[in-house]
Length: 327
Image 1 (spheres, rainbow, N blue to C red):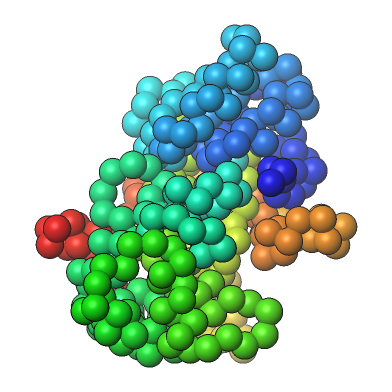
Image 2 (cartoon, rainbow, N blue to C red):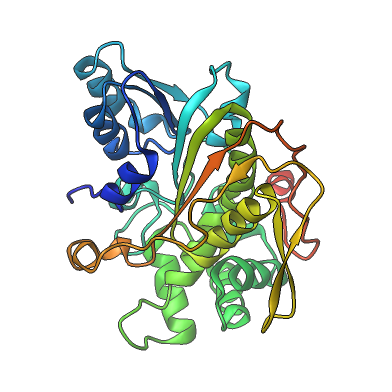
């Protein structure tokens, strides 16, 4: 399947790269953003990815753009821990890449038979481990919180029944179990939300996103641009709240009459535009995966980085460390 860098014209406009500048592509994937950025200006790009399978594509860019591109294999949440110089821009395309979805052996998609893996890297528990070892209550909470699945407990109960009869080892096995639990209604596959939830859990995607935003704050120069493309409400909520906090504003008041309250710390970002940018109708027609995309932009000030704080822990949710201890 052809790779589509989502919202590419809007991303390039927001980055506004100039000759001699340095951009970190924190979610290299298939290199769509990186190559377009390298073509937009005589600039340098540092690609980051925790997936070792992107290496061949990165090597081709290293050869084509000699001296202007390099890849570092690392989670994007650690971009401030790998001795990078201050940079002019950071771009993040959150979630699973189309390349990962299209590779059956990665186990991300219920549309292709493959091992129930879902790991963006190649370490840690798999999705098969989660459905084998987490309790009904824990699976229910994962499906409810990360997938916003209304019939989460029903799915979890069916998984428990199925695993008593044998291991759930493949994507299609799990998809069939979920379809058997809640049936098929409308155009959306019934396994969509549960698969999303498991993927987010297995890769700690929301925690990684928050830590990446803090890391980007640490390495951006004054005037540096932070561009983030998200694909569902949980991701976008984290980015929106981070940008509001770091720009010196937080949302308060009632849901019907929100007010803006100034915080005490010097703002580390300015927000040229508070609303999100969405893909064009033409792009959505050409690439269905872009339909839920949202782009947000923040520009770094010269204030010292704020002290990072951990995301509030949800004691009701299981942890990857807890799952790994059971294996």
